[in-house]
Length: 348
Ligand code: PHE
Image (tube, rainbow, N blue to C red; front, side, top):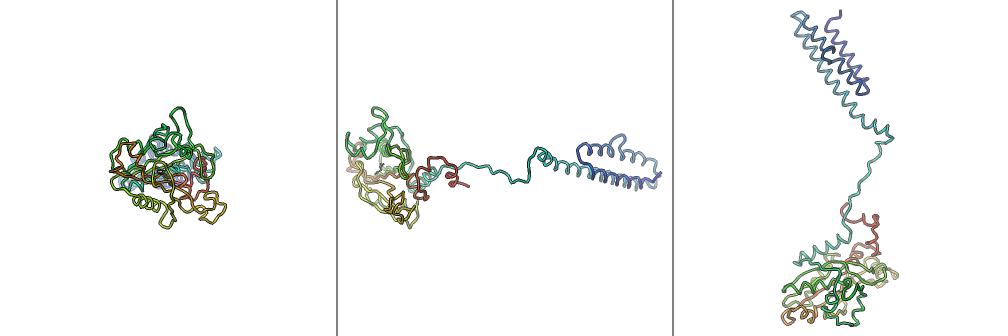
């Protein structure tokens, strides 16, 4: 009969060899039972035999058996880890998947470029103490035209290619009716911007759409002058486009403002260098907004005394300004929902 020490050594080697070969959960369990099984496991038997070891050798023999027990436990755990880690790869391989392929990126949606641009505009005006107001997209003739000093049948209405609904109702052609609604219910000082969708009977081309976005601005207070209009709009345009951009004010006409001015900025798409530019037509300038001093008649229509108060207003095409700011040659891209276009904007 080999000595206890030799048996321990033999079992250690046998365990290591079997553990190295164990290739699945079944082999692992068999190994566990063979060594740690309560009734007939090798270690149980060793501990039993320890009883018959002479008293002088008991201590040392006990220590060796305990060492083997720890080695076996650790060895079983290592096998378990090895099998556990291998399991998904093996399963995937048997299912025909290749785990070495790079993962598929999940695309997270981003806000629409026009939303981002509108928020940028709002941020600039909020910083100057303006508040944001909204109004209905379906308007009455009164708010869209009459209160804004367009008499019925006045030829100036033609400029706003209107989409009529029925009777008195129409799709608003600009965001100016919101200024009327706000002035009706608010006492000066008033300092607002009103972003929103507007509708016109237009044939789509690179810079015109039947539906687009505008932001209207309105200031009414005592002692407001054209200098305020010019200073504020220049500040706004520089904040949006940077200091170097060329800007020009051009006299214009709107029934609801007097005097009126349109503002052009240099064509960012061609820089004035392309005679066939589809955005500026080769002029090098593109109109982005209309503005002017609120007509005294408009103030009277909303019961604000034009002797005491004056105001200025502007209306800016958000889509058109965005296309110039972003260097996009085609306004229709904004509405086609082509992800290749949309993914270029917003958070990455
Ligand atoms: N409402 C005008 C338009 O749509 C723009 C504008 C707004 C002009 C306010 C002057 C003052 O063209």
